[in-house]
Image 1 (cartoon, rainbow, N blue to C red):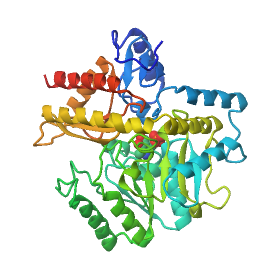
Image 2 (tube, rainbow, N blue to C red):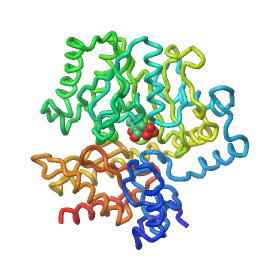
Image 3 (spheres, rainbow, N blue to C red):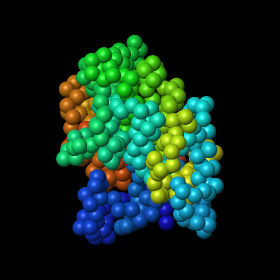
Image 4 (cartoon, protein in one colour):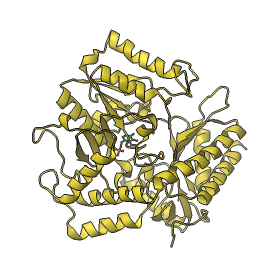
Length: 448
Ligand SMILES: Cc1ncc(COP(=O)(O)O)c(C=O)c1O
């Protein structure tokens, strides 16, 4: 039985017979999705999981940014069990129950901005984005949206229209929802302006803001733009941290033109960066926040939290059967309580500093580590041919991930050539350093 306190992974038999059997059944019956590594989980606690063949791994993916408080946190599982004994479902969109209202009240309190808000509940990140799209169109009467190159906002047809991180997401799916115009994101490591800029005088921010104004002056009437969708830190697109003043300048521009600023915190939110919301690092109060993933530690739920004045106001304009499911609401309230009371957000900041130091050291030591970036426990390294050319090396990146997996560290890629490091926020220093040692071994072996 794993406890979650194991200081090291223990891998003896990967990929074992039982894992092979399950993978082959999965491949036969389940739609092709985004499978990344042959990890077949049996049980998970904290940052640790045991696979079906008895190997012990560290989960540096958090179920793709979901289990921020750790796998199976006892307070979360207790809340789910207690709610399960009462009722599992009661169509919270059509009727009423307290846990749903309590969570909405809590979300309105913990999101930035001292104004009246409302919460729309969905079941996935993409559904929160769809709700934001519909709320923005419905309440403003405007049709256009601005999103950013490199963005990932989901895969349903509205969210897909905003997504622009990899061609594979969009190939063969046109037409998606019309009306989205993409702007360059201020990626300090790679941007079309050729600016190597992260810090003051913030040339990169200025270049992007000027570009949007250029669009306003030529083809995009700003008074027909309903909203700007932006990730505080681009996630799937490669863990891109924009310059410190970027979101502030973007919000200023949005305000000048009466455009809603929609902050997609689906990956970066819920304590991951060492603050409850990643946008807080940029001192910006967004109009709207979308959240999902870590919201209920794995029970599917999402939310779009928006100004009350932008509510749909008409019954039936937007709704869904499962949104605000009672199990998920109970799990979410418990998750928030754990984040607030167990110091996990502070721990994300503290362990994030250690992780940053370790990844920066790898960048110094290895020619193929072109960049190390991120905030808190949302960090990445970018694998390149060499530092000067910055040429992407996705094959080498995948080899590093594969080697790390065989050593017991489960990792995911992001962007064209990056590896993300997103362990649950309950990780301790010893676990983190041991994991970083194994990642470094994987890099060393991959470069030969
Ligand atoms: C920033 C962001 N927005 C939206 C989504 C879509 O969420 P889901 O996969 O739950 O639909 C994701 C998923 O990775 C995401 O990272």
